[in-house]
Length: 144
Image (cartoon, rainbow, N blue to C red; front, top):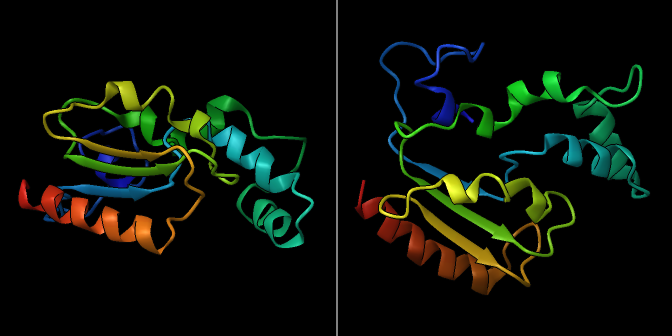
């Protein structure tokens, strides 16, 4: 979120002067569709997930409106001047589903951004997936 908002004056929580982000590494973070994540957590039958949902998305009159929640979606601030992005995402993520990335990924720039989508991956990478991601991350970092 910070990496995508640093050059956008509309974001309410600006970085302090002198701080800049030169690259973004994202594992299973929402880039659009935060309302989907709100519903998954808030409505979960798993007590810890529903507790997290209530903490992150306090319910007052139902779900938060798309307009209000969009301020916290990185896609809202995406532009061509953003730093390079490394994005890892699992296709079987039950917390941040692939749907949250559908609008975002086509906007990425293949000459500077890297996407690792694992169709069978979960919310967090397993040990082998993490090792492969690390190898790719270090190659990504070498280009910054």
